[in-house]
Length: 265
Image 1 (cartoon, rainbow, N blue to C red):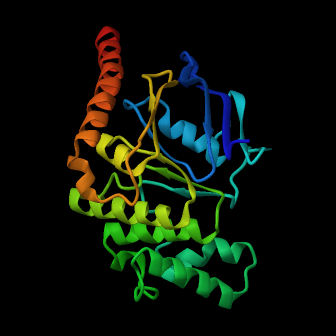
Image 2 (image 1 turned 45 degrees about the horizontal axis):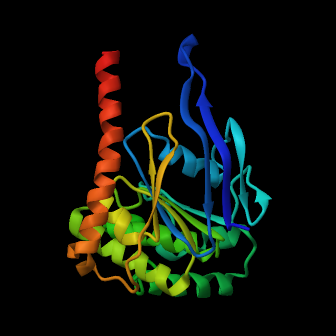
C-alpha cells in the first residue's frame, strides 16, 4: 500500500455571483511511497496548491478521496505537517514556543516539548535562537522555524507549498540544501509544490508535472541523481537533461494558458 494515495481527486469551485463554476482539478490520481520526496510543478493556476490543500485536509475534493496509510483524509491533522510560502508564525511567541505549539495542543509535557523543539531547532540551524521572536529573524530563519514546527509533531508526511518562494536566490539555495539534508537524514515522506524547475529536480526523487487548468498529472519523472546531493550537481549533464525535458513539458502547458487568455480577452 502507498503511504499516500490520491484517488480520482477533482475540485470544482462554484461560480462567483452566478457565474460559471471553475474546474481547478480534473480527476487526478497519484501514489506516493513511504520516504518518497515528490515535487509538483506546472503553470500558474494548474491546481498544484489546491491538490496540496486537499491532502492537508484544508479543502475538500468534489470527487475522489485521499488515503494516508489506508485511512481517509477529510480534516487537518497532526499526521500531516504543512509549511506555507508565508511563514505563518505566531509573532507573540518565541521561536521555541512556536515550535512547541502543536506539541502543547496535543498535551505533551512541557519538559518534553522543549526537548523536542530544541532538537529540531538544532537540526535546522537555529540553535541559540530559541528565545528570539519572529520579527527578530530573517525570512530564511522564519521559514526554518516553520519547518521545525511542522517536523516537531513527527508527521507521517510533510507538505510544503512554495516554502522558499519569498526568499532571495542565495537564501533559497541554502534552504534547499538544508531541507534536502534533513530529508536524507530523516527520510520523511514529502510532497513539495514549487514553480522553480531547478528546485524541483534538486530536491526530488520524482517530479510530477501538472497540465494547464483543469489540472491533471501530465508526467511523472524519476530523478535518478545520487544522494547525498550537493548544489554542484545542478551543473551536471544529467541535471541539465532533466531540466530541458521538464522545461519543455511545462512550456507547452504555459502556452495553453497564454493562448486561452488571449482568446478570452
